Length: 72
Image 1 (cartoon, one colour):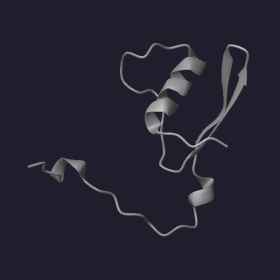
Image 2 (tube, rainbow, N blue to C red):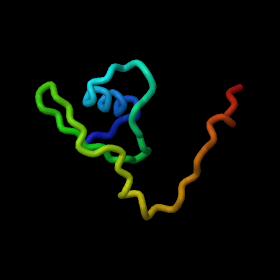
Image 3 (tube, rainbow, N blue to C red):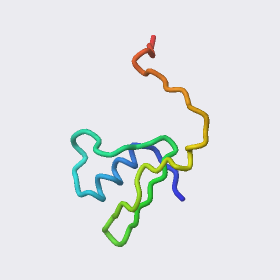
Image 4 (cartoon, rainbow, N blue to C red):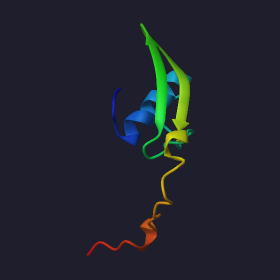
């Protein structure tokens, strides 16, 4: 098991798909999501991505509107 930040997950996804680091994100990155990859030599393969089934029984979580945050 490895726990990491979404930015690193984005790089793993792009490496596995052979896309560059420029441009918008092309994958879902779920909070507490499970992502499975296989690394063999230089090859990175996505086995499962952004799995959230393990969170199904949790109560609904708040969603914060980031546009309302004001830095003073």
